[in-house]
Length: 235
Image (cartoon, rainbow, N blue to C red):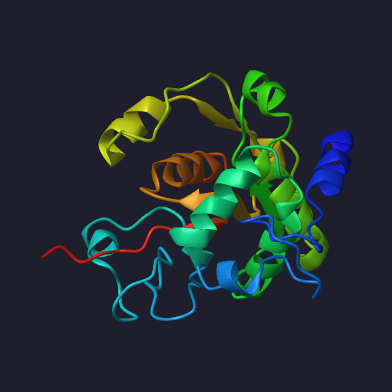
């Protein structure tokens, strides 16, 4: 993992080139001026439970219809434009972006009062070997440094590979994930945990893991992601 990070830092210096277009920058930032405009920050009206961008700061229709099992979710950006491109890069060979994402997420995570530990969405050992790292794990570790909260290593493990979730509905995603995660009571019992992932889309993965954590005795679970899909009220 450290070798991969060093290689990425050499090929894509995070403070010298834009992490979206690759253009040279010299102001010590992560993005050039033009690309920075494409990142939509989730700093306006949000649903107070799922944390998605909404038109008004009230419960979204999805949370009204069925409250998620986590206590509260926060995300730093809207999953679109520049943020979506950065997350794709993060998953496909740019682990150094964990520092940028943790910087954006830190203020949001500080809103999660009472949290005493952090865990992350796991991958199977095979998937982690293939990618070289678990992006949610390295992001959790970076947030741990900023929030001064411990990461619970292997609080949750993924026992089997699952089909790609991209084209599946929430119901199908939940079925696809059924029985794939296990949490360990001795690690999570009595804890108020921030579950870290890169993006919140349908919420099926986060909800499945949250239920498993609560089942094994976690006091409560918060969710923190780099980005979330905007809630769009049906016409």
